[in-house]
Image 1 (cartoon, one colour):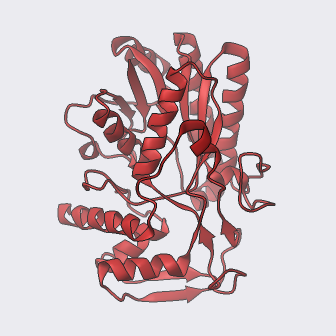
Image 2 (cartoon, one colour; image 1 turned 45 degrees about the horizontal axis):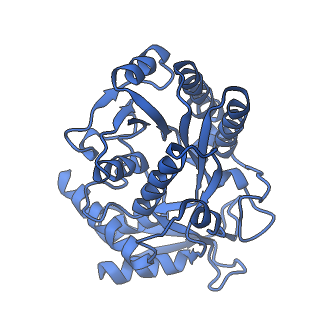
Length: 327
């Protein structure tokens, strides 16, 4: 049994590759390398460069490598870019996913794992966020992902395609051995940005809003270590292989950190007291987004290993230093 990982040369997909290899499996990666990097993958893992919407190619991969499950990570993910280029995001994230799902169904595969996002909740009307919280995406990115969830739900009823839909909260950190991490230029994630400032790659960083009704006035987010997230995908794979009907799950720890707490952690771990600029709030930034984190534990038996902010920062910082040494 082999897993085809779309976008497997990217940040989260490459960590699932590492997790599957550690389990003794040989995943196959399909990636157009528009934002992914071949060097993030182990040498023995097959990498096919191509488009997920190329149905002839995907069908050939399924046949040649005896694929039994598809884990779909390939997507555009920058929320502000989705606002300025919504049609590009609907093309990449929704239209191409529809093509991939069609190929999956036509090939007779019954197992599909989908990389979704907490952005489908938008500005939640309840906190903490649970799987029953009403989706209300406020960006084309969030809408493009929710549409794929709907397609997978309909495909389950019509064709028997069992899908695990995993909604990520704030993914952070890097492989503990620094084999993989967030390598994409222009990344906007807070922990990566702060680590880049700490090692001198950026001159400074900005904090947007210090007057929120939170414990220190800055936004609160639920950060999950990328290696724990990869392990959750492995558990989702086991769940499907055991014959279970697919389910939608939030991927989070169930508690949050403020922007200032994250910056303090990066300063503490790096030993660098770097410059921080304070700016007005950005439109659309909710004061707090934290998940309950209960259902994934009860359904999959998820037990995080890296639920510690300083540890997340330590691993992210180590990878940033490795990345800097490559340039």
